[in-house]
Length: 230
Image 1 (tube, helix red, strand yellow):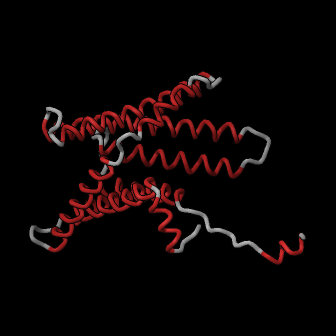
Image 2: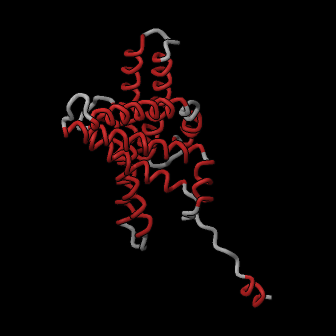
């Protein structure tokens, strides 16, 4: 990884890189809100004031990321016909359910935001309920994605070839999707846990995502080696 300023700038040039970085701070704020609630701060205390600032940052970052999520469903919808070409019927069904539920989440999320903006009827609170409905589909999508990775891991384990790197990648991806299930189940009110644990889980998944977007360090060319080849 290129850990220089240039590498960080290259990360921020990407829309996906900026989104995952913003997501990290969004869930960091949620974790702070969760842990501060455990401390039960008194009204007017410094901790209570900082907790209010963290809650504001969390809400505003979530809204900004929701705005930049528009049209991200198009590539997912375009990839759905490819799922029908998968030979194995179980893999075909899993891939289809995962993509359809992901696209459904994004479209419902747009309607929820338009309700929050009062462009569509329903009011601000109704928009929140619509967004929570969309998050239920996102929870289901990540649950299916975790099953897909687990199935792939088992098939690699039964193979006689050494595929340790691929199995490690499957394990990490399945772990990320399970953490996303924890987050979305809480945010959609499907199954509530605690803001502290959801925040920590969000920080982990965000780190995994933006590290994947981070550019690799360029290996400088060796002129001496080129001269020897000549």
